[in-house]
Image (cartoon, rainbow, N blue to C red; front, top):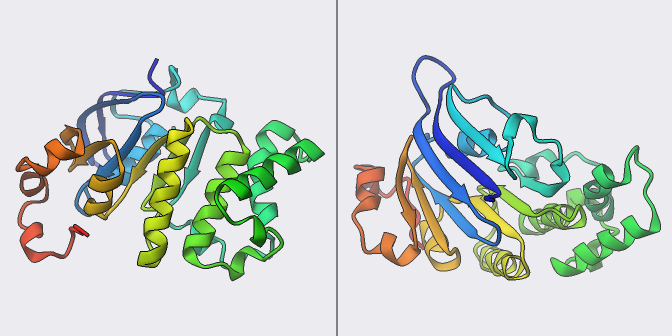
Length: 247
């Protein structure tokens, strides 16, 4: 059973569809990178997969259940594009952020020693256990992203969904960040991310989805690199160099 199953999906906020006839599956253990020009519907597709919108046509399933009715939310970890912006005013520590991942399992905020152990292990896994007592507001962009991934790991999620996770992260931290995602994937975590850096997707992921309102490509990075999909999906923007990052 796929963790994610999208079939003949069409969706729009108005009369004009943002997504048209989109079909895809994500199986357990995959590492999938989704790319596409600005306004292509990538973030909207993630929101539909997470059950935040109702499709106009077609179906979206999470772990075999309709996404809008899916109740085992601890199985899915989501790191939003603006997560670092949302934490700038949060007067809490890194460990407290990570412990939030245990709330669905702990119930009513009754945090136990087991929950704290899971949080500490998660912090060690992402390499920031030494920052546990720091305020989340004092961390760099890359460190905050690691903290939020640690929150997902503490919750023992099966699927990690990320929307533009490297926005605002310096180049050196980006490489380390993708190395971390690769290690987590090798350890069994399924990863689905939207990313503007095409070069990073081709280098680090196992499968590329190219979206511009519909799916233009779904397959291995090497096949994508040898195809003309980039120009067909992005159009003239690839010549301007304003929307495509290849390195």
